[in-house]
Amino acid sequence: FGEGCSDVVENSASIHRHVSDLVTSPGFIQLYGTYEASCSSLRPLCATLFTFVRSICPETCGCSNATTTLALAGPCDGCPRACLEGNAYSDSLANLDCVEKSQGELQGDSKWQEWSRQLGMKLGTVLQD
Image (cartoon, rainbow, N blue to C red; front, top):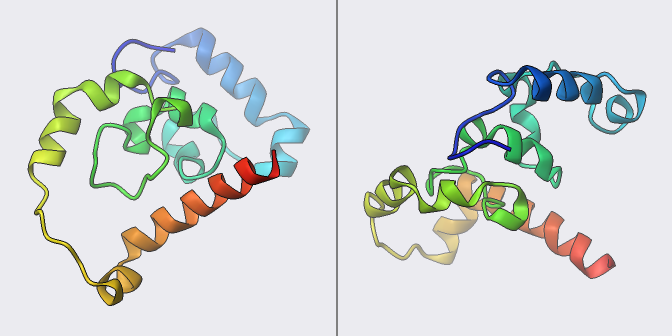
């Protein structure tokens, strides 16, 4: 929607209007609940299979940070390609410790648990198709 890896909902009147129409539609409310047309409000949907949120709120969703709990961060998952190609993403990768954790440590790590949940959702959808 926008160039780079910036949230576009608050920066574009036309996109804000469309998002407002979407989040107030009965079908959306039935599926996802009640939200405002802002990235801060839509943040809980970043880690769902609803890729549209990541495409309009990539900064809020953490698309440019390899250390967030967002496992679905590729272009096919809604994050703009610019997020993965930008300096912020490269810097976040460069600052990671390259230490392999044990299975027990991973099982107790909330970030890994969240990645597992997200990847399980996506895999379940892929296998259904």
